[in-house]
Amino acid sequence: MTAIVDKSVCTGCEQCIDSCPVEAISMNEKDVAVVDADACVDCGDCIDVCPVEAITLE
Ligand code: SF4
Ligand code: SF4
Image 1: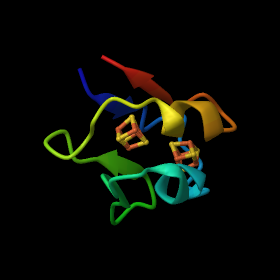
Image 2: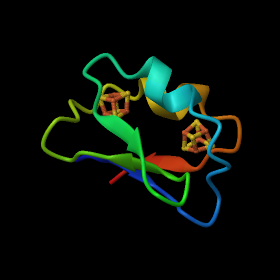
Image 3: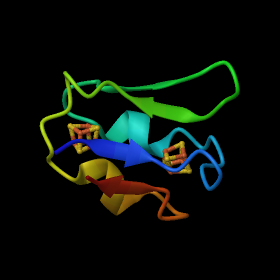
Protein backbone atom coordinates (compact mmCIF):
# COMPACT_ATOMS: atom_id res chain seq x y z
CA MET A 1 0.00 0.00 0.00
CA THR A 2 1.02 3.56 -0.64
CA ALA A 3 -0.72 6.91 -0.94
CA ILE A 4 -1.48 7.84 -4.55
CA VAL A 5 -2.35 11.35 -5.76
CA ASP A 6 -4.84 11.76 -8.59
CA LYS A 7 -3.01 14.31 -10.75
CA SER A 8 -6.23 15.46 -12.39
CA VAL A 9 -7.78 16.37 -9.02
CA CYS A 10 -4.87 17.84 -7.01
CA THR A 11 -4.96 21.65 -6.76
CA GLY A 12 -1.41 21.99 -5.43
CA CYS A 13 -2.48 23.39 -2.06
CA GLU A 14 0.41 21.63 -0.25
CA GLN A 15 -1.66 20.76 2.84
CA CYS A 16 -0.71 17.10 2.45
CA ILE A 17 2.98 17.95 2.50
CA ASP A 18 2.61 19.64 5.87
CA SER A 19 0.61 16.70 7.24
CA CYS A 20 2.99 13.91 6.32
CA PRO A 21 4.99 12.70 9.37
CA VAL A 22 7.76 11.19 7.25
CA GLU A 23 8.04 13.93 4.60
CA ALA A 24 7.13 11.50 1.83
CA ILE A 25 5.27 14.09 -0.27
CA SER A 26 6.73 16.73 -2.53
CA MET A 27 5.49 18.95 -5.35
CA ASN A 28 6.44 18.14 -8.91
CA GLU A 29 7.27 20.66 -11.62
CA LYS A 30 3.57 20.99 -12.45
CA ASP A 31 2.61 21.86 -8.84
CA VAL A 32 1.04 18.47 -8.26
CA ALA A 33 1.73 16.48 -5.10
CA VAL A 34 3.76 13.28 -5.54
CA VAL A 35 4.23 10.56 -2.92
CA ASP A 36 7.53 8.72 -2.52
CA ALA A 37 6.20 5.17 -2.25
CA ASP A 38 9.35 3.95 -0.51
CA ALA A 39 9.01 6.57 2.24
CA CYS A 40 5.21 6.42 2.76
CA VAL A 41 4.15 4.50 5.89
CA ASP A 42 0.44 4.35 4.98
CA CYS A 43 -0.69 6.48 7.93
CA GLY A 44 -3.52 8.16 5.98
CA ASP A 45 -2.90 11.64 7.40
CA CYS A 46 -2.58 13.21 3.94
CA ILE A 47 -5.88 11.67 2.88
CA ASP A 48 -7.63 13.25 5.86
CA VAL A 49 -6.32 16.76 5.15
CA CYS A 50 -6.74 16.89 1.36
CA PRO A 51 -9.64 19.29 0.70
CA VAL A 52 -10.43 17.78 -2.70
CA GLU A 53 -10.03 14.07 -1.84
CA ALA A 54 -7.25 13.67 -4.39
CA ILE A 55 -5.37 11.02 -2.37
CA THR A 56 -6.17 7.35 -1.92
CA LEU A 57 -4.31 4.38 -0.43
CA GLU A 58 -3.75 1.72 -3.06
S1 SF4 B 1 -0.16 8.11 3.96
FE1 SF4 B 1 1.00 9.12 5.65
S2 SF4 B 1 3.15 8.59 5.26
FE2 SF4 B 1 2.03 8.19 3.34
S3 SF4 B 1 2.27 10.08 2.15
FE3 SF4 B 1 0.32 10.22 3.32
S4 SF4 B 1 0.85 11.34 5.21
FE4 SF4 B 1 2.77 10.57 4.30
S1 SF4 C 1 -3.72 18.21 -0.07
FE1 SF4 C 1 -4.70 17.33 -1.93
S2 SF4 C 1 -5.01 19.09 -3.32
FE2 SF4 C 1 -3.54 19.72 -1.72
S3 SF4 C 1 -1.51 19.35 -2.68
FE3 SF4 C 1 -2.08 17.52 -1.44
S4 SF4 C 1 -3.08 16.12 -2.92
FE4 SF4 C 1 -3.04 18.16 -3.86
